[in-house]
Image (cartoon, rainbow, N blue to C red):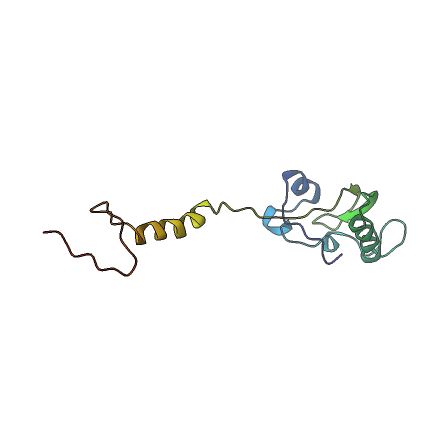
Length: 125
């Protein structure tokens, strides 16, 4: 279960677990689970088994015990499928810069003439 962290915390989770957002954000699932689940299995082993099933393509739905901020055990239903976190960044400006640099290298903005690379163009007086 070491791979399962809470990167995003919704308001419902805050109310359920009685934590502030900064207290719950980044916590591991194991840190809000009791040592053992209701069926007697170690939470770490049970969590790994569900994680393996999920990685294999299954979407298990199961009962899971959590603990709130006061240590009270909360019987819950958990499940879902594998979440892949991706960051998307607009790079259109970054891609535009080399084209703009090349354009500027071969044109003279003042005269509108095309400049030749490495050629010295004498000023017009």
